[in-house]
Length: 295
Image 1 (tube, rainbow, N blue to C red):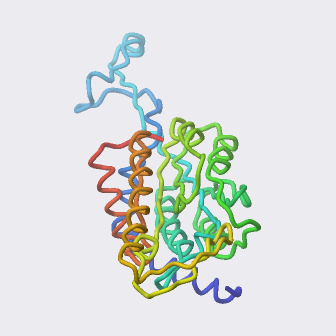
Image 2: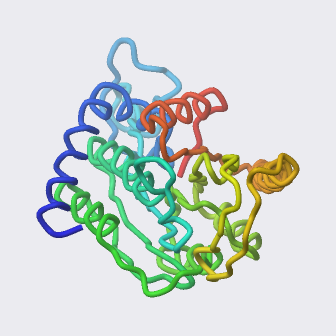
């Protein structure tokens, strides 16, 4: 995109996400991501209706009047987006690519974070981490992140999820809420994901396209692997070929879901042509039903 087109696109994106964030998602975001717990705020005099279990007996004895300890929720969070910018994520058979779907997801979550005064950071990766934007607050910062996501031109075509997760673990010593956004067409990242899931509230956002799950019957098609450049001719008119393709994709998704379930890592499946507000709403509802986690 040229600069004016990017600016117009981001302006439209900001407007389109505003109502969903204000009316629905910001409140659900707050309910789902509650911070690390509570911290001491003050000691004050007891007031009718206060929980007697909060009475500070030492201060009460010293002053001769009942006092309570007051605690407040340690609300502030850091939200990270780890976004796969490899060549396979530039694919889209509908009117948007997987990368564009990732930008929409990031916008919905990031503006929800702004609404709740949380910090947002960004890690863009391919075969290596290619761009890092440190977490900060505010709408202007979020617009900068979305601009990075929309305009970034990666140097490499492949995917290294392990390196992205390792970078996250190195760049912050504190627990974060981190969305790993990828089509997960990669290997050998399991050990690093186990470590990241132990340290962070890690969520997998699995982005797919309908034609990656079901081949249309359009005859002989030359298919190129976006990341390796390998080319092969596939007879999509063959019911057997389409069934084998469908089974292979289903097996990969099943193994990925089973691995994430084993790690207790929540995930959401995003499709390029779908309503991402509805998908994110469904994810929040499912997570709330399971119980709130703390970052």
